[in-house]
Image 1: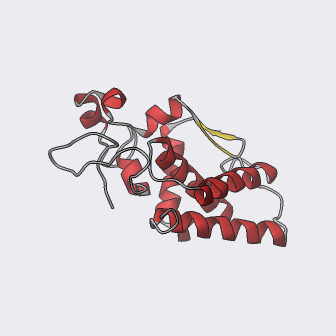
Image 2: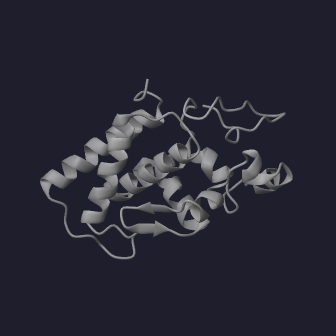
Length: 171
C-alpha cells in the first residue's frame, strides 16, 4: 500500500499517481498524516508546504471540506484518529462503530483523489444514510437496537468498503 502524502514527491516514500487513480490509503497512513496520531508526520507536512503542496493532514480535511459520518460531525483530530483505530482493528468495536470508521476512512481517501467508482460512492452514501437513521453520534449515546434489515445493511456496507480498502472494488 502506498503510504506517501497525496500528490507530492518525497525523497523517502513513493508518490501518488494523478488524482482519481491512486490506491486507497490505510487507516494507519491517515493516523500518521495528522497532528495527533502516533508517529505524526505533521512537521514533515509543514516543512514541505502543507496542503498547498500536496501534504494533506486529516486536520486539513476536517477544516475544509469538513467531514461528517451520518449526521455526526467529526470535529477533532483525536476523534478521527479514534475512529481510524477501529478501522485498523475491526475486532475492537461493534459493527456500527466499524461502519462509521470505514465510512470516515473512505471519505478521507476520496477527498484526496483516491480511485473511486459508483459502487464505493453508493456504499458511502448508504453508510451515511444508515448511520443518520440510527442516530450514530460517536458513542455519546446508545442507538436503538438494530433491526435485522439494518444489521444486514451494516454488514453489506462494511464488506463493500472492505473491498475498497483492499483495492478490489473500483477497477
